[in-house]
Length: 245
Ligand code: FES
Image 1 (cartoon, rainbow, N blue to C red):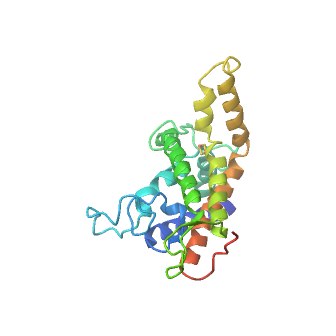
Image 2 (cartoon, helix red, strand yellow):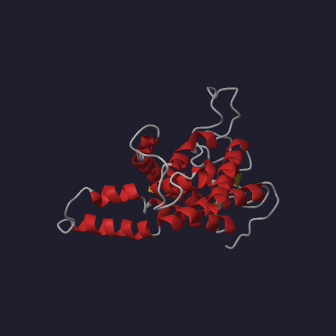
Image 3 (cartoon, protein in one colour):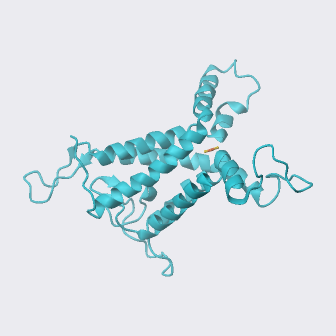
């Protein structure tokens, strides 16, 4: 029940936030739900404003162009699969609980066999880590208010938002680097790792993150949502970003 409530809350909030299309930036901060901003009106946009080919019947939001990738990465995650199969439709009801059916099909047939696409979303997720790290770098450079003597020149600084975005990258990194597919990629293909010291080391590193994959999954899930809330409320003027440096 707790997992059901937490995952439902996350999905509802993220869907709502993705369709807002505003209040997703504040100063040098960009909400991770909107990153990378391929098209949009903020200074973070890569290719300019809303594209002309965007269908008129779909509300415009830059998040809709990118959020599918991290969303499907989580949806197909081996850990989340186990947990939402149990909590959303009780199939299986729990570990070691007998199933009422005669034949166990697992994920070997349609539609659940599609979950094997997870390894490809891992490759995309690794790129997203780079984009989010770049956002942290950009969150270190503040533009002074218009009218000041140094208006227009970026200056180095650290705000609470910078730290929020940095923690987000650390938690998402811990989650992504512990991915079962990554573990297979770096070491699982070999029968003997002793003859490949670099791969062995990489395998040990991924295994180390993998042991706490569930914890990283929940912490990063919570924090990515909180990061959006933080920037959204700053942009709406509900609370102020505290500048540390
Ligand atoms: Fe969870 Fe790949 S298994 S992220």
